[in-house]
Amino acid sequence: MYAVFNWNFRLKRRDGYLVAERGLINRRSVSLEFQRVRGYEIVDGLAERWAGVVRAWAIVTGLGDSETRGQLLPDVPRNVAFQVTGDAIGPYRGELRPHPPVARQRRLFRAIAPWAAAALVSAVGVWVLGTMIWWMLLIVTLLLAAGGVPLGLDRYASLGHGYDGRRLSVRSGSLRRAQAVVERRAVVGWRLRQTWFQRRAGVLTLIAGVGAGKGGYSAMDVSMTQAVDLSTEVTPEWLAPFLNQSADEDGTAGGDPLRRS
Image 1 (cartoon, helix red, strand yellow):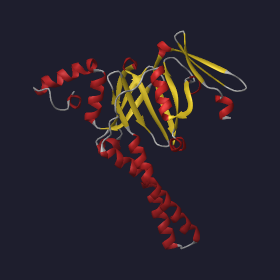
Image 2: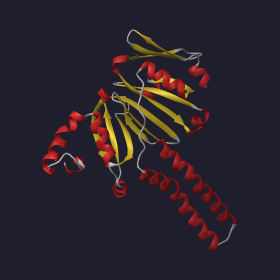
Image 3: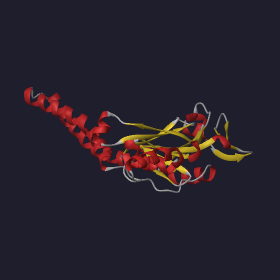
Image 4: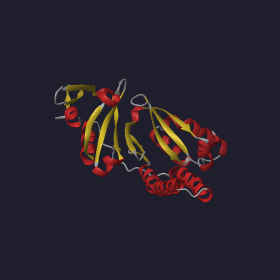
């Protein structure tokens, strides 16, 4: 089915459009007006990552059914995807910045804790009843809890955010890892979201509002300093009044400005 749908996939520039053509039995052609393209998203699953391949979608304003119509590339080698999207839309030339260590702890906890709790219940069942079914449940839950360690570490390694002066990039996920690259002009606002658990851990989620694609792209579990630095770096003119007001109140330009304002 992959070969039937993506046979002879071609991506072209034609009269101000990006044109994607594919298909063996039915040939499909989708045209994306280049002036409405605001970036791209590169996605890979766990199996695709082992194979070294990714998929790519365009981030386009006013495009419905973007999962199908916005596809720029099917499964292709990672270096090919970055080369093609860079040539077609524009490359991201910066490095992704790591998130604080507490983000790693949160991912390890969420990957291990449910199975560890189930293992504890199974151990009680073994101690009380001692039947084979409880022994089997104990072994399975212990294996799943152990498997949560590499999963949590991989989820943390997948986190990242950055800005190269022209484009913002955020990445997250493990079983489905996605890296979005968005032009600065596409950012229309910022939103800070913090759950109770994030407040306890001292991290938050910074969401860049974009008038295209999914409508927002998140840098998950960043510190307050990282959130302030990234939003100030991308849109300094928006935050200047708050920074100046905080500086006047403090009598200095230092400190943590958005926390006070």
